Length: 288
Image (cartoon, rainbow, N blue to C red; front, side, top):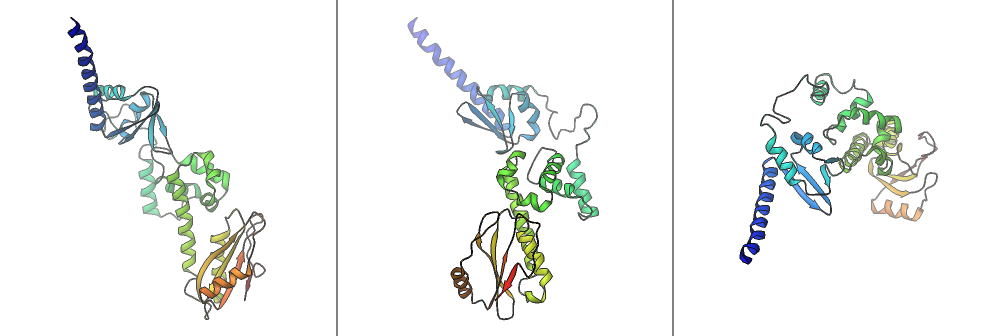
């Protein structure tokens, strides 16, 4: 009798272990990955076709880490049972719809098609920002977010130049932050092409336009140096110092040292005023 009592828990433990393994295999077969933490579980992978099932199972979408989170008990068995009980035809790409198709289905595809056929020039700022957000934010209608960002910051340039702390109130994730920084740098480099490798003093308006792209949306003062060769062709554009909202230090020794290192024959010194509307004239830039 004692032997039967001892072996019974072993059979139960083995059965539980097999059930857990089967549940995990069901999740894997559905394209889902489960990560365990302290009283917290994360499900990632091909979650889009199963988003309603994950939501019904008590999960919440984490925009920052792009995964579904569960708190409390291990959700593996519950999710596996729901997957097995679901009809085979159900899913994001099954083509089986109950009732009318929601109006927002296919919106991203229509927006991309419109941009390809009619061009992006006619798009309003919020439409262009919405289009860009498609590629960093999934499964969410980005139009309201685009409108809120423009209402808060004013222009596309100001949105792209916003600090991470300012964007935190909009639940902007790291992927979108990188996207914004990349877009701003793309704009700066496109403007730089118009003044690089050509005499900048004969293209003064293009130089001002470039400085506008580089400095207009900065939140603190910068002291930039444009290094020129003997033909007044731009060698390099560098930020020599960063300051506060109304002051930036300048160290002549460091300016001369860098100019000699680059064999520059002339300099254009530029700084901005974040507390004032952007304006760049000869009063703000000096040549030596």
